[in-house]
Length: 220
Image: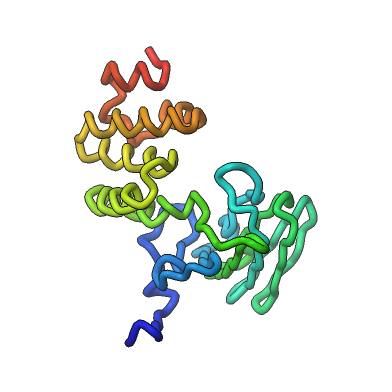
């Protein structure tokens, strides 16, 4: 294929699965789409969250309008407390960034496509997406691959607290204690909420007894 045309199937776009979670198809990242956010999730069994509960407010959110399309199966959306039955072929548009939204699979192999952007502004990928491609490799314990992806993200977003945190997670898993402590310290200095996350994240078990780690998270 030329640069003008790219083609891929949903299965080709999916990251390695995370246990008890929907499979993520990295559509925007795979095609290098820069005008809007677009991704898809597939729940292998009924009852799994497909779209985690969230709104589009806050420093680490995009303020996006979001359109959800149920490609297969059946989902139950909850938008600001209102339940919506959404069989395949249903579109759910959430205009208000303050609206709380989530979706749960009502059938196995339910796929939901999500498209979003902030009106009137050039598109900027959401902060969570900067680290997410590595998550599947944490699940499969391929920490070298997770580290490679997080290193790439860090080169693009050197000051992003979430990227720094997840890079530190990969470094801890690989025995790179000095790097893990340094990047975790940068993450916490940028966003204090990552201090609490580090206290209980099993990715840091390898350095949990390190005095520097204890000082960072206020343990022991």
